[in-house]
Length: 82
Image (tube, rainbow, N blue to C red):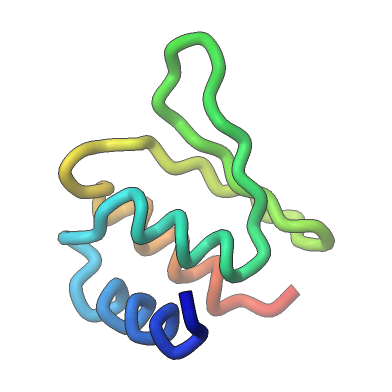
């Protein structure tokens, strides 16, 4: 995915955080350098970490949309500089 496509996707996420799919959020996080750790033992919560960044993001995989609260946490994490 090109950088401009990621920027457009991030802008759409910011404009409407209530209708964000898990895959879209994951693309943006991975492009920003976050690494994903998949859940074990039947959990639906994915954990994202970034080297050099003390913040740990936990996002539940929910269909069709991720809850707005988690989307706003991701946006905040992406806007902060570490």
